[in-house]
Length: 91
Image (cartoon, rainbow, N blue to C red; front, side):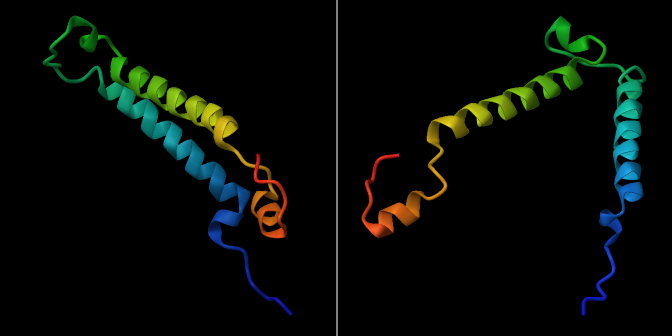
């Protein structure tokens, strides 16, 4: 008998609200990029949306390199079980 009610994040409507709120915050921050004077070291730092683009590129780099790294160092699902049974130690 489980009368556990779902949490507020279990309701798709609330998750959708959070996603749209994050989208709105991103758009507002991008618009705010137009509203202040930048004191830059290099000319390209003054371009509209430069830092959001660099941040997104860094995010993509981290995610893609993590996927590649996972392929390089991943072990089979039963890696430790085979080791305990006396199976081969190779991956």
